[in-house]
Image (cartoon, rainbow over all chains, first blue to last red; front, side):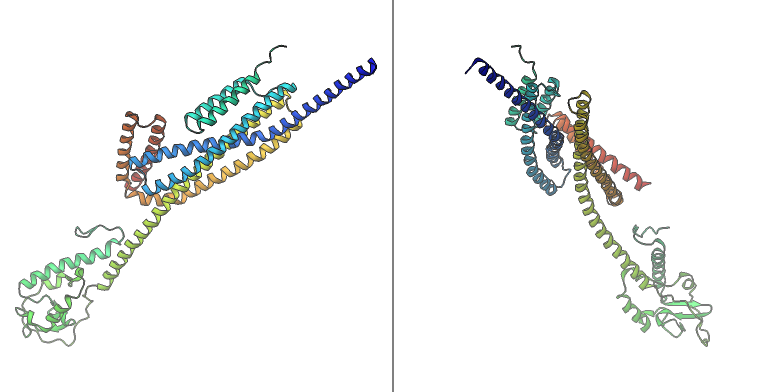
Length: 168
Length: 294
């Protein structure tokens, strides 16, 4: 094989890589568009679930207190507590599953946007705000310790991904 | 005017029954006086003639009949007395007006009249009173039944109301989340991270969700308001009677709640929420009490 032939081979490889890169960037953009469609739905559901769980937990606490103070009918309070005790764990499971998925996708989107050179729409400050919200949810028993630890890890990965890359 | 011996009962019309009972009470007293004087309580005089109410108001001549000092052996009196035991308690003392009988005197016999004068019926309107008593008793039963039903409705209302409020709260959160997403997308579109076309597309889908949630929220709020409007009058009616003891009970609960906070048994958040709820309930009951007292 002549030197020119070898040089053409390398040139084609670069062209192939370029096509792969273009394809990668196009795929990232397509995935981000899909993510943009899903994101409002997830954000809405997560917000509703957090509110509903918090309100159920408050109601359980208040009903027990009202029973002690003699402010509610015993049978009615028992029935309502049973309803709440059945509903709340289901809501918590749904919240935990969706929350972990949402933050994992967010981490992946940051990583791929950075790689593809697409401007980021998340700041470190946004992630810190999410951390605070997670802490509060854990304090109010809206998420379990296990899921709290998992989410904390994912948010830390988001923060790491947001840091500027070290110079080569 | 209410007779002091008449029990208070708002279910009964005030005048007719009272008047009759008052009249029976007075005539009973008069009859007792007359009987103690040895004159038959059934004897009465119209002008110069004497009549016996126990003999279907027939004219009598007391000089030849046992109306004075011996009336207890009179067949008419004895028959009346026997029937008297069968009458309701309230009517036992029923007697004709006092004025005529008060003028009874042991008078000389007069020549028999050709026919007795037309007399208004002096017998007590037993049927009317009995009917009223029955109607009042029926009203009592109806009230009990109403109160039972109203309480069931109020109980269900409180539950449904709480459920509606929870749904409204969720919808509000949902709307807030969509509004925040829309704002985020607007920023992205402004800085050029997403194309104008992408933004329009995403905005349209969020707007549709927002419109649906807002419509649902408005619908639930209207239902809640309709529900309150129809149930509140019953709530006021039923709760009015127990407002005072209920307020006292709630105040006691507030005091206990304060103690629980001081002893650290409950958090300040829980304390504040429950205190606010109890204070609202007290205010509502106080308003009802004031309305009733006015």
